Image 1 (cartoon, one colour):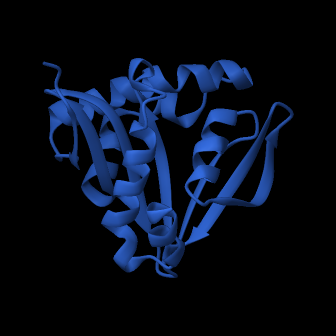
Image 2: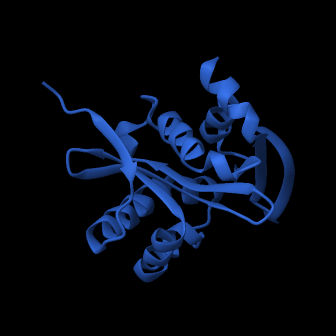
Length: 167
């Protein structure tokens, strides 16, 4: 019998931080290749920087046994905008709904203090854009980062979370 994936708060400890950083590095390789840029922040982030994020942000992990196979982080600013970032899923676990489960879980975790949710991805990241649209996010702005990358910011009202989750 196979193990099931469990989602929980990311522990603020060395082992979890190391697992997330390794997974982040693995997951962002395809994004770096897609845009021809291996200097993106998820690939250059230090362990100390990640540990600081885990200490200050809301962070969730999905585990298969003891292995971290997915993660997401979020912060809520003073205006009530929840910024969701670094939603990552191990390549072997993709296309099984885990990204959507993690997105819903982080929305539920921070939803009480958020008026709206916001996240971003690159304009060529079709699977990311498709996932976010499926969960009720709509594009609200674009920003050209360089000649190979335009960042697409998507948003939805926090009240929409309950409706989309029940649809």
